[in-house]
Length: 295
Ligand code: HSE
Image (tube, rainbow, N blue to C red; front, side, top):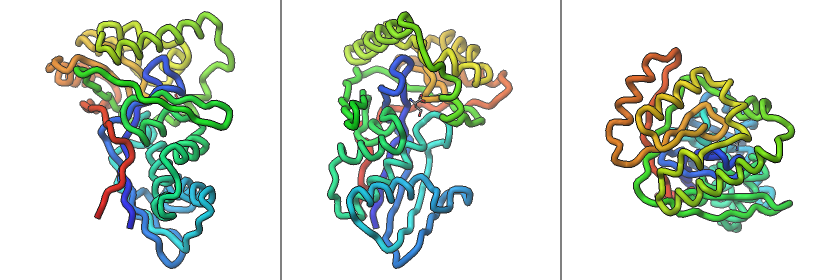
C-alpha cells in the first residue's frame, strides 16, 4: 500500500500567469494498492468513480511512461482541497496519480521526471510544480522541458483564502482570456512580476500592492465572480498588503502582515453582507510538497 500526501496550491499570484505557484497547507491524501484486477476508487463522489478519474488517468499515463504494468488498482481518496475553487485540486489529483505510479513501479522516476508528466497532463506547470516541490515555485516550459526554481519567501506573511460556495472551471476561466495582448500590457506584467518576486523574497511587503498588479487574466476573469471588486475593496479596507485571484478563481487570496490579527475576523463580518457565502481560511506555506506517508 502506498500513501501520498499532496498540498493545495495557489497559482499565478497576480501577474505570474501560468508561471508562479505556491504550495499551501490544505492536503489531499491518496492511497494506491495493487489488486488482482479492475479499478476501485474509494472516498470520492460517485461521479468520479470510473476510468475517467483524473487520479487514475494520471497514474496510468505515468505507468505507461515507466513501461510498468499492474493487474488492477484500488485508490482511496481523502480530500480536503476544495474542488474547482482555484486551489489546485486537479493538480493534486494529477500529482497524486503520478507519484502513486512511481511508488507502484518501485520509484524509477525522479521528481523532475514526474513534474514533466504532470505538466503534460495539466497543460501548464504552475500548480503541479509547487504541489510537487512545496514553497513558492517559478516554472516554465521550454519546448518539451519543464524548468523550475524555488523562490525564498521572507517571514511575516499571512495567506488568507476567501473560498466561495460556488465553483468555476478552469476551462471556463481560460475561455474568457483574449487571444492577444498589447505590448504595453506585456511590459506591465513583466514589471509587476519582477517587483513581486523581489518584494516576497526580501520582505519589502509594502511593495506587494504594486507587484500584484496584473493585466493578463484578472481583468477578464473578475466578471465571472460576483462581488469581485467589492471583495478586493473590503480586503484593502482591512489593510491587506494585496489580493489576487487564486489560480483561475473563484477563490480570492489576500496577503496580510502576520501581525494583522483582526483581518480574518473583520472581513468575515463584511463578507456576510454579500449574496454568496465566502469561507475565510488562514493558510500557511507548505514547504515539503508531495510526500510519501510511511505505514
Ligand atoms: N494558470 C492557470 C490559469 C491556473 O490561471 O488558468 C489554473 O489552472
